[in-house]
Amino acid sequence: MADHLYGFDTLCLHAGHIPDAATGARALPIYQTTSFVFDSADHAASLFNLQTFGNVYSRISNPTVAALEERVAALEGGRAGLAAATGMAAQMTALLTLCRAGDHLVASRTLYGGTYSQFAVTFAQFGIDVTFVDPDDPENFRRARKGNTKALYAETIGNPQLNIADLDALATIAHDAGIPLVIDNTLASPYLCRPIEHGADIVVHSLTKYLGGHGTTMGGILVESGKFPWDNGNFPQMTEPSRGYHGVRFYETFGDFGFTMKARMETMRTLGPTLSPLSAFLLLQGIETLHVRMPRHCESTLAIAQHLSEHPQIAWVNYPLLSGNRYEALARKYLPSGASGILTFGVKGGAEAGVRFIESVQMLSHLANVGDAKSLVIHPASTTHRQLSEDEQRAAGVLPEMIRLSVGLESLSDILWDLDQALNNSQ
Amino acid sequence: MNITDDIAGLRRILTRYRSIAVVGISANWYRPSYFAAKYMLDHGYQIFPVNPNYSEVLGRKCYPTIAAIPESVDIVDCFRKPAEMVPLAHEAVAKGAKVLWMQLGIRNDEAAMIASAAGLDVVMNHCVKIEHARILGGLNWAGVNTGVISSRRA
Ligand SMILES: Cc1ncc(COP(=O)(O)O)c(C=O)c1O
Figure 1 (cartoon, helix red, strand yellow):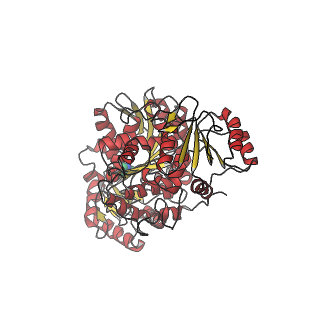
Figure 2 (cartoon, chains in turn cyan, green):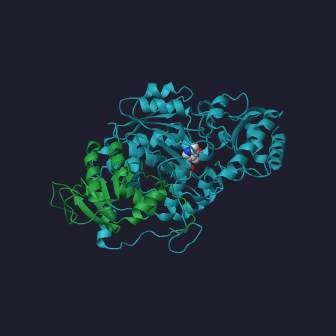
Figure 3 (cartoon, protein in one colour):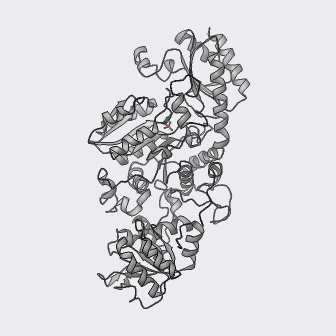
């Protein structure tokens, strides 16, 4: 008899957590402990040898964190997940499990700025070379690939350009080269897009954004599809005896979750950017309403995009599902139920008008984050990108008059009212 | 044919039966067959190592064939190549085993048919250790998507 297949909404509430065996507690217990007792010397040996599954030390695994890992893995349709302290830590953990000094990555050049710096500055110090390409033509990834390229990397929805990656095309190019496609699915969330269904092999998230959803907690995760053939010759670290783990061959021993086990037992265990159990609990609370929040974020954002595109004080509006947007076709294909809750727009009057707009908002919060339940605005030219010259800002896709709005769950009429009064004050 | 790969069916097999012949077991502690046997031993199953190359594995007598095991066997767990499954299916039937279990990466429809026709449950292309940990607890601690959804206590 086939197993019943539960729907996405049910997985948001149940995947990864069955009531606690000891107490029957229905909510997820917070296992606020660093360490776990062994039953015997032999049990300890089995755990250290990875011959049995269990918890040793919370840098490596923790039952509260594990519930979060399984839940996100289930929502993404993946085989296994590994949580990390932040989104940056999760993508670092994924990529340092794939690459060593002398290896190469091809990445979209429209990534979140922090990710760009991680690759261009920090990975360069590790001897990992990253080529950045224009993602609008996926063939650029193929052209930039070299013999030592270990992965292709892009964001489902680029932050802050809001460009959409052609996931099917990128997956084909990656698989033609025998390397995995790694996708940052932060801005879409698995409610709007599941990149594994389009051929992605590893999905990473900043849980700090929509998955947590309330702006309370930092976190990240990597999810493995379970489908990549790690024994294709390009990843000896997956098939040869591990130096870091006394001779275990991760792919042979753990099969379709071998990559996650290697990331956990080697990269996470030795670098240590682990998620705390309390953070895992808070993020999981957020995930329980992901399927209720995301439709509202999307509906309000589309309505605001339409309102602003007819507004006399607005020069331009960028939202992938707005008709005429250059990514509309890709958005309809990959984000059929909504293009998330972020839009950018240009205020007439350039940078000064942008600053005046920001200083005039009353309910929208001026801060550097996205994906909160509350509406957030920022003027990148005077904040996150202010160290760059205007030319450099334009090259990074940041125009002087650009405002980024992350639309929250407040009454739509109140968000529109605050935008309108601040726009009037900006002129 | 009687192939089991749903959660309820695997749970029934893993809770009802207690003795396992591990055919093709390695004596190297870091090999998957040794991992699986050690795990099942630690979880209360009786393990009969089967491999003509060894006299002892896991501190237990190792038998050259399934037929040489002096006690009854519930599950014949096969760590051998797919081509060797048909003779192993016949041996499992002759031994009166209840389950023919072919490990991860191993499929053989003819062997499955032989065992199934004789009334055995058949599992193919699954690891006994991973399925035990998935359904009866432990694998979730490794962040694996177990597919287990339940409102009842673990
Ligand atoms: C698309 C994207 N990826 C990754 C990150 C990094 O996540 P974190 O801030 O949780 O480290 C961010 C954060 O803004 C982001 O927007």
